[in-house]
Image (cartoon, rainbow, N blue to C red):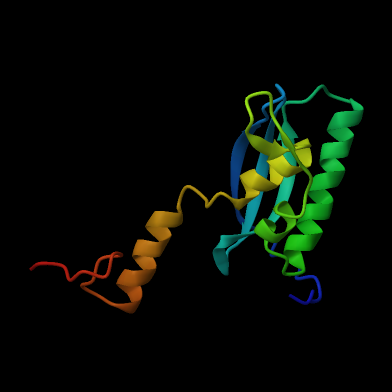
Amino acid sequence: MTMRERQILPNRRLVETRRVETAFGQTAFISVGYDPAEPLRPREVFYSAGLKSGSDLEFLLHDMCVLVSKLLQCGMPPEDVAKSLSRQETAIGDITHASLFGWILDAVCVPPEWAAAYDAALVETRHPGVNADKTEVQK
């Protein structure tokens, strides 16, 4: 995939806040922003709360969110960024991200809470009388 010029987002946009918990005991809250023109595609991420205020880790997370946001606004899918990050084996043998950065990106990859309702409305707009699963509505 080639990177394109950064797309500037409108001043008002859809945002969903998510709790991120790692296997290493860290918890943070991030806010994922979506472009109203493409409401299922994440376009930015902000650190909201959870880490010790003023800590190096908090500042690092702020900076990570800025970098991820720039990548998203240049057209890079969050899944592509997430799969490129370091992984490690846990004590019980699972493979997980090696850093908070990977956990944050996994949270950005989760569809927004309104995704199913948006898909259903889109199908209804394009094909009146048909459900989101493409079956006809009985009258």
